Image (cartoon, rainbow, N blue to C red):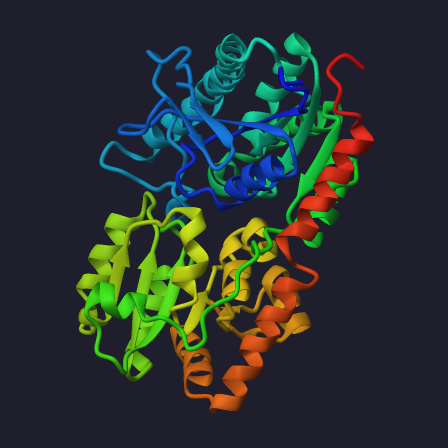
Length: 430
């Protein structure tokens, strides 16, 4: 417990806590509920090592780089995962691949375990009084949380926001190494005191792979009542004509999130501009490709917004587009934060017709589903929403707000999490 008697929770993040909306909602919600909250994030240039924000503390602690002198084996790119002949000949390429996927991956695994130990020790030195709850955001932070529990006590909650091995870099690991990491994740998850995830499809999958039930805490919207009529924030920021309809895409600008498809689709949506809000490793490439399109003047890129600004800005759009591609199981089952932000802002969505998002869109009636791989179908969905008569748009807005203030409200999600903490006891001395 904290010196003032409040129970203490530490949120362990594998990011710098700039645009992590879920962690921001957790930190602010738990602080309002009377917890002493510390967010431990990664260091980043131009960000303070420590700060106090909205009732909680942020500590940015540098991740160690064990065995940093050893080369890190590159992962195959999605488009050419199998590799191909090169100037050196196919035998040389195959030999390099075998070396990378044997010795290289073993070194990578050893480095990961050493990183977890070193990072946990650095965090423990910064927080010697421990915590009642160590909550790990994702697979990378989970062994860190377990080591902190072993050293300082408390309980560990694994917040599995993705299907770890089916997402991002992990999905591109060679099969044997993914299987090995899968066994480690299962052991770590079963050693944790609680398991949390973001939707029912993820929970079902995690129960099969990890062997334990998960508490579902949706990325629901915080309380917000959008202005009516809407503000024109994007018009003012970008100098758009008053009659321009704003199509908004929010989130990390990385591969397979449908940004490329959306930039092509907007060409077939009259009197509308696409605004992409977010940062990410693929943004330079995607932005350059968009600026080479004939309709480049109708595509705009803006930097990521602080989480507390997302709903007011989203509410000034006419439609939110999220054509996430079915490239991994994780993407097929995802229910991204932007879906709930649009819901909370009263803005209809055009979303991928994939099992995760489609179920919620159909259940709530908050928008239109499209084939995410087809720019033509995305454009069709956008026109259906933007050209709808006023009474239909009013119905979508009402459906969004009913869902946002009802079953998917963030306060309801937070109550589920607090109930889990009560079951765990959350007492480091217990």
